[in-house]
Image (tube, rainbow, N blue to C red; front, side):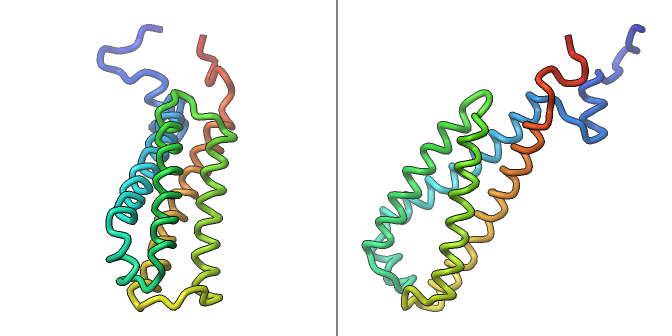
Length: 158
């Protein structure tokens, strides 16, 4: 059957009903990874460049701010490299998700167990920064699960 002029192809129709092709799911996963990497790299740079001021503002030691900044910059760079891959390996993406979950758990533990004598701004910052980390981990997991559920040649493509 010849498609009508201007008709949408099968992939677009399926995408409109909620089904996505492997390349679309991979692209969505890479965009989420890129967003995560951008946030980590920018935050890590800010922590490193403004360590003294941030330490005073947050009520934590400068060494902690520098250490966290260095970790964020390093991990963010790795996540960025992962986002540039055409099909990021599932195990590596899962590692990023686990790192995010550990970050959130450590943030909650630090507040609950009162690890540092933070200022009000510091306490709010620790709590608030856990929100986007949680959301990005959830989005990454959803995209990874969607991609890994797809067959190698989805929808009978030749």
